Amino acid sequence: MSKITIFDHPLIQHKLAILRDEKTGSKQFRELISEIAMLMCYEATRDLELEDVEITTPMCKTQAKMLAGRKLAFVPILRAGCGMLDAMLEMVPAAKVGHIGLYRDEETHQPVEYYNKLPNDINERDVFVLDPMLATGGSAVDAITIIKRSNPRSIKFLCIIAAPEGIEVLSEAHPDVQIFCAAKDSHLNENCYIVPGLGDAGDRIYGTK
Ligand code: PRP
Ligand code: URA
Image 1 (cartoon, protein in one colour):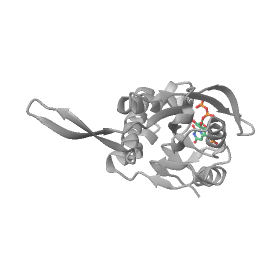
Image 2: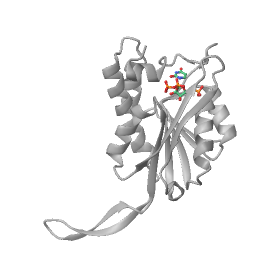
Image 3: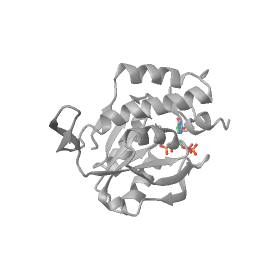
């Protein structure tokens, strides 16, 4: 079973309430996705290793700590995962970026792959897969299966809203992948949308509906 972390931080919960609201327009929706991703990044990178370095302040030489040589890669699942990417890169500008394009077939709800470009050295990296929505879990499972073919050092999955069904499917398929989310919602509806959820994340980010 995957380890799951649900962020109950008041700032995240407050922003999530506005994000869910049907009256929130695309501009504010994008800003909120970004802000929540930045706060999640802060917590999800808590276990990065540090190393001692010597620096010189205007006053004297001193010991300080910097990130040890661990390399990261961020992999958004297109389209909606891209909404989380810039905030993650603000926090870790040295991370490399891969993209996996998947969309859910409207009838079957199964993910269909249409794009895949990962960093060449992903086998030396800790990977953070980004997608605001974990619904049936099909997209996350497929994206992580694709990434695992390149043997990354580790994989974490960061989403904003997760359905219990998706958590179970992802945990069973990839028990080694730690899951981070801001909320575990009630259930999926008959169209496999998360309830209460926030609707279609990609459409709300890009204003396509
Ligand atoms: C959404 C979402 C996830 C997927 C989750 O993408 O961003 O990738 O659905 O559903 P699942 O857990 O049931 O697979 P969508 O397929 O709508 O594509 P889009 O981001 O291009 O809108
Ligand atoms: N994809 C979304 O964008 N929203 C859902 O509720 C489920 C899948």
